[in-house]
Length: 546
Image 1 (tube, helix red, strand yellow):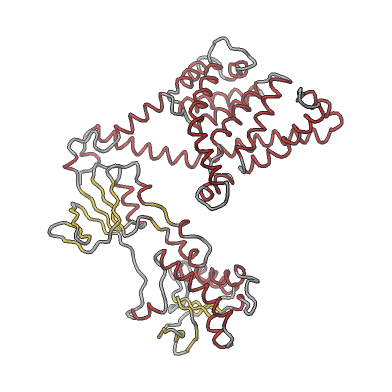
Image 2: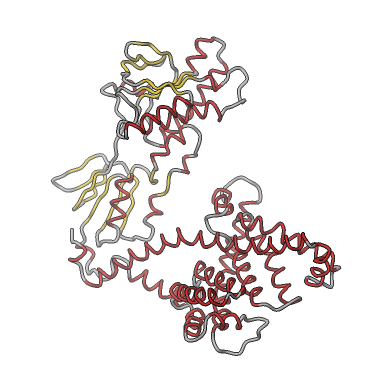
């Protein structure tokens, strides 16, 4: 396969740009949620502080609040109470990121109403712009909305799926015009152009960002050209001036700049056009000549090894094919949580295709490989043949029954989602059968669980079953006490977790024993059947063996 340095200069540039774009997307996914959280907490603190001041000096503040939020449709006292209620309640939800768009609406109205009816102040303009941005786009991942929205969008809960779809359409149609308006408004404020001070925060903008930095930054923002770079330069310059000047309005201008960097230039900008051109140029077919000469790399298996290798090769000029029996990548370390009803299968499975949607040279096939012809260099998938130049086998491993494959009928393993759901059904059925069983001996057999193997999965599974029995099913049965269940962890070696340090193995064993798990080391399983197991010649009745 050609190395990175054996392709053309244009191809190397294309590969470098694709790597940079992928790194920048990762940077945004990690950094922007924290920027969003900081902005929300700062706004919530401001409103709550104002509410606290009014509450502690209520008699004097009531008249001031009535004048501050005076209206023709309400008395000053009622308007003041409404404003104070907004300042008390909305910031709490806003800081948590719960109903963020809805709570941002009254906060934005209150801010802009104070600006127009009480005192024109640049801080109000910046704050109002930030809040309108939250109305348009909502919060990022570190919020309750960001946590629950993906689940509610397809749920059976009434109204919420319709609300979520409506907000998505709202953002789609009104988000880009807002981004354009925001850039033009703030860019105009930075330029030495005439502007009404009631509508443009020119005083603070010129104070914190004097020319030529302000002029150049204003032009780039207004045009939507290099906004990520211009935004960061302006933030650094504004922070430096703010530290020397200490202007209160300057804080909110810096936060607005941070939000602009988070939202981006938007659809109607030079950045968007340049990005579209670069994405098209970065396609593997550009700058690399005839793609027919590219090596054909086939990876069998989309587990950790296969996905990691595909991620390394996707930026190179190769035809990459990823084959797996399923169309999802499974995070196996958390299978035990699915098996003990702690997580749903969707929580640990992610679509393979979505991970490579931006890589047109990567093809994903959901089929079962039935054979490999080394001489002809083909992968057989039933009647289909797939030629390859380089083959990567990353099919993973399976559990071992030590030559006793007949045990698999009585003691299922844990490697796939189907295994986890089957074990979950087996565990929950054991408690149900124990509840219905009148014979005490049989009931004890249903409430006895044996896990064979003291590696990480066995240890996790034993602890999870103990927690399920003692805490997860508490007070749910009438004839049995799930906490009375007996859980055995059997290991043929001298300690559990043999690949870990001795101190960690000992600590894990103590933790399991505190949960009520009986750990049996130096114990070899000799027989497994439908009624239980034989360990070191001792018969143990157990209806559930894993």
